[in-house]
Image (cartoon, rainbow, N blue to C red; front, side, top):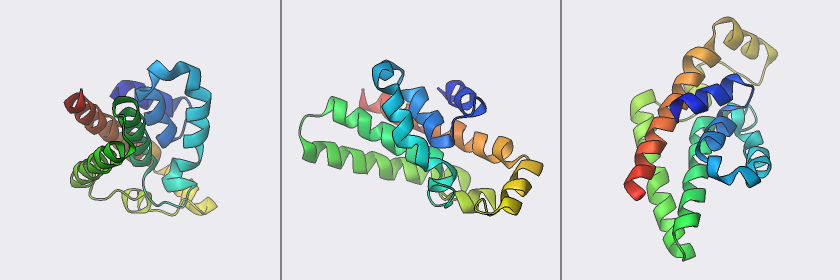
Length: 146
């Protein structure tokens, strides 16, 4: 999944979309909706640089997975919240943070910040690493559930 997620990112999808698309291949009939829903989550949610898009994309996949596999809403919520917390802890342990601003250490809401990120290849160096890490953690968590 890591390779698919990185390929998605390199093809022009944002970090959230890259994760969602990599993990929802069996939902091809819903791909347009899933990519639309996850569109605003790149750049830490619309370049607000809050929670990393690779993380929020993983949260969406966790929710989709649990809603497909569990019948009661209370079971779905509890399983999803537990997996989100577990995912967050692992991602933060590996990367030091889950927010985009701390991960990139620049301000994407400004033209200067975006230019800095491009000039220093932060999308390739940091975003791709976060996408890969997100894909690997998510794959591990989903295997435990099956």
